[in-house]
Amino acid sequence: MYTLGAGIWQRLRQRTNYYVVIVGLDNAGKTTFLEQIKSRFVKNYEMLNPLKITSTVGLNVGTIIVGSTRLNFWDLGGQEELQSLWHKYFEDSQALIFVVDSCDPDRFSEVGKTFKLIMNSEAVQKMPILVVCNKIDMEECMGTEIIRVLTSDDRHIGDLALITISALQGLNIERCIRWLCTVLNTEPLLH
Image 1 (cartoon, one colour):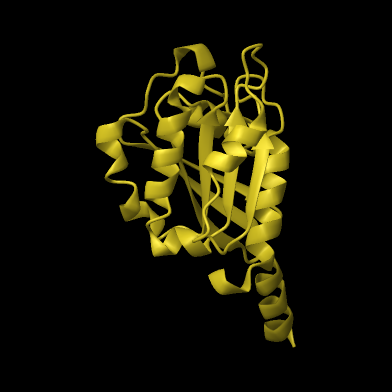
Image 2 (tube, one colour):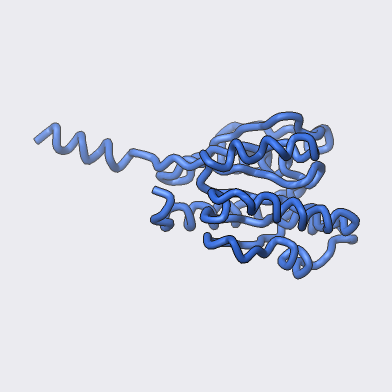
């Protein structure tokens, strides 16, 4: 009887493990976004000063636990020369976050091209994608409609959401994580 009870207890405490890749152009706010996530979901985590965060060369990692879900994040550098490495992380990921600087209309064309390149991966076509429109706290922020158009692709068959955030101020960070947890825990194709 003890073994049965211990087995049930262990099963209840078991966590579902997911890998989430965070990509986007350089200076979109990916690392600041990840830092905000860790500061909200990791006990006693001291967030890096956002004003001292520099462009990622390589990757940053972070892990959070929300209920019975463990989310492992890979924040990949957005410089053009690093984008060719992104696909190596797609196969091992169950979700993708695409961060867009919504205050930089001069790069919207590049955002669209980059998203189309990402969609060339069959793994990405099936996974949940969260498009994060960052820097909405800035006056020069553009509306989300153009970003919605730039990040639409008929090849994508997974869940897709677009959420506006301010990584600097931490606005809507919890909403992003709630969406990810909900979608990942109800997506039968990913288990």
